[in-house]
Image 1 (cartoon, rainbow, N blue to C red):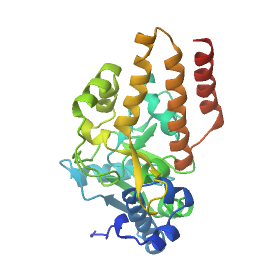
Image 2: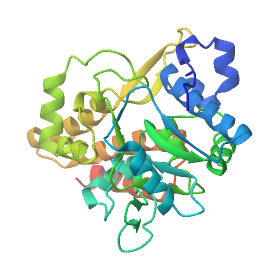
Image 3: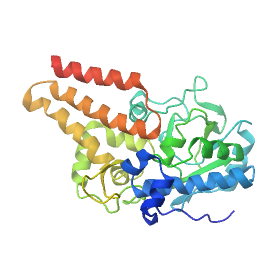
Length: 312
């Protein structure tokens, strides 16, 4: 084992940013998102080129659970021969049995959900196929998996976890009992730094809609951390090439809640339709960036929203 140098997105020059990223990432990703993606991509390239047959990748904010090495050896014995990646820690839709229906909202937003291998997601006593995981703080990748990841993800295009773990070609598995977690500090390297000034607003909007409970079910230990995660970034017209307006998860989702609440004073269901159209716009941008866009589900949501606006 050893330390592998990370890529600091903010340190990239404009020319390096242009050469290393996809066109969409240059306009709609933060420097932190690009740097995180490049860090993992460089590891995949090194493993694919030099071996060994498998490596464990741990980010600098990882927290290991007791008996990490013993549990790791158990996993290696149970993983199928075709495995590419095994997540040792994750957040998102990560139930080892069957994913609750309300948790599948995450897949509607990001796309990339995985079918269940059977009645449950378990394939052995300690290994399962996760529905739609996120997080790259702790995982194991085979040499074959590293080659596949570096080939299918040659350039940063979005969040590295939502892009890579959403690849249908990837043989992705996860440990039933996670071996590690991460520090859910108020700042995150893929968004902007600093705690938001709207914590009360977060609690109110997320609590009344059940989003707080969903976040805890998804393994997020600090909802303020989730609030500041960047959905994407929007270029600011007539500004420098690297200035971006960051669209964060908390404010963007809370805006949808507020639009829906307009039904009460307006005594109309039309705001629900507008909220769905707003949501599908956000989802389409996320899915296009992550490479998980599908016309049918997005079209159905858009049609539903338009119908509510028309008839509501």
